[in-house]
Amino acid sequence: MALKLFNNFEKKKRDRRHLRIGAISTALTAVVVVVFVLLNIVADTLADRYPLSVDLTAEEKYTLSEECEKVIKAMKQDVEIVLFMAQDEVAYNIYAETGLTSEADRLSRKLETALSQMASASDGKITYSYLNPNQNPAEFAKYEKYDVGAGDILFLSGERYKKSNLNNLYVLDTSNYEYSGTYTFHSTLEKELASKVYALQDERIVQVLVGHQENRDTINTLQWLYELNGYTFEEIDITASKEFNKKAELMLIAAPTSDYSDAETRRVEEWVFNNNSYGRNLMVFVDPIASCPNLYEMLDKAFGIQVTDELIWETDSNRIFDGNNFYTTSTVLNTKYTAHSADQVLGKHLFTPTARRLTSSWPAEKKQEDTLDNLGIALNSYADTTKVMKLKDAENGNENHAIEVGENDYPLTSMIAAFIDSYDNNNEKVAQATVLVSGCPSIASLEHVQNNTFSNEDLLVDVIDTLAGIEDDVTISSRLYETEALTYELSTQKLMLYIFVVGLPGAVMVVCLVIFLRRKYL
Image (cartoon, rainbow, N blue to C red; front, side, top):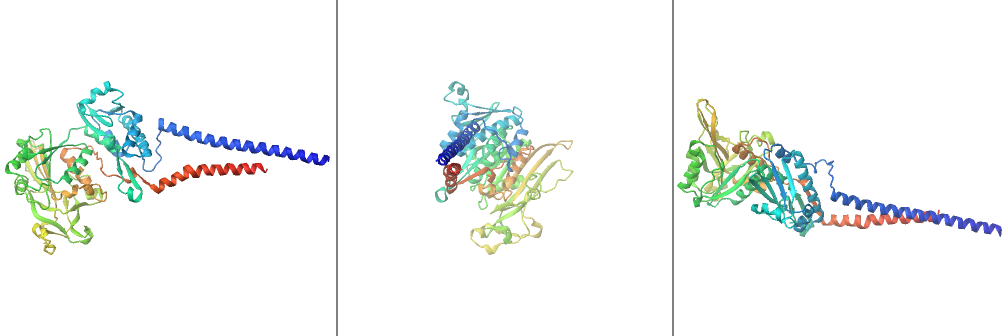
């Protein structure tokens, strides 16, 4: 009897001990889970309110890009950036346009980080602020003259200004979402910020002549690329006899398909020569098949560039694309206009689909005794496997009529820069005018400009910067690199949902239950 009482006592003692240990273990597990959840909530809240970026990635995704740093290094003018929204409204505004919560939050944090880093890196030359027009109408009133509103971004430097918008800070591609459940979100905010700051450093106006059924794709692509790199486009309808902008030093004629009148060609020629003061530059893209005899005659007589009636025809199958002998590449030659885009520099070729052959009657080298240089320099060349085809044969589909040119005519070219240097009595150059003609407007199509395989973008920026006399080595690319993109799949979103909403909490509950049961039977 005594032994039984003793055993019962010991059993109750052990049960109480097991219960106490089990309770303590369960309580500790619950506390750990609660602390874990609270720490995540606090950390997430602090990260939202006080973002801290430490870049440990190979691509350096959270530091300023090289092109942005070059823009800041080249700054001569102070720039004030005003964002017309409260700082905590940025993410909401992006979400309202895209419907993407995480991307909106991420981009808003990246915007604040980029602005802060640009201000710091510029040593105060860049300042920025947020202003909600509805909450501060009196402060906003002084900016109304710039025609801005909620969601806009204003860049100010003295009397000059540029405008942008939150929508320009990203590219959202949802074209495949309906079929594959995928979309791609590209951040372009550094390109946009850098290009606007860069544009305010110098006034570089490109006059675009329209009115003769120009190639709109060429104009739009060049405008996008060149405005990224600090230029301002102004369209002028030459058929309306509107006065040219006297501040402009660059003029663009983009592949017209109807001819200029004699009076119009005289206006263009007189503008370039500028009463023999020069200092102006003309860029002409020639349509591959259009007939514009007045325009071509002006290019020939005034600048020694002949627009032939021949298209480049490649015979080497290794040099053509899509089985089309007109779709071929060419070599960018190393000249004063192509210092950053020559094949020797980039190691890649220029894609020139359906290119018209050009020739020049001006010499390619300077004669030392001349005080006035009239030089015609080929900027690209084709392999000796190329032939030419007359336009009439190409239009009629007579592909067997491709012809060889004379041995002395090689290398063939479809891009020539003709320039005039004027010297004083001391043989010092005092002025220059350049006319650059391309027989291939498709080199400026968006598809080819953004293709990193080719040097089209590099060449187009190179030549206009040379024409404008830019020497700061700043180039802002229009290409959307993969490291800038975040691609999401619907299945991936579901997987993440299952892991973090179902899987992880479920695993914690199972672990807690196992611990409880093991402790219970100790």
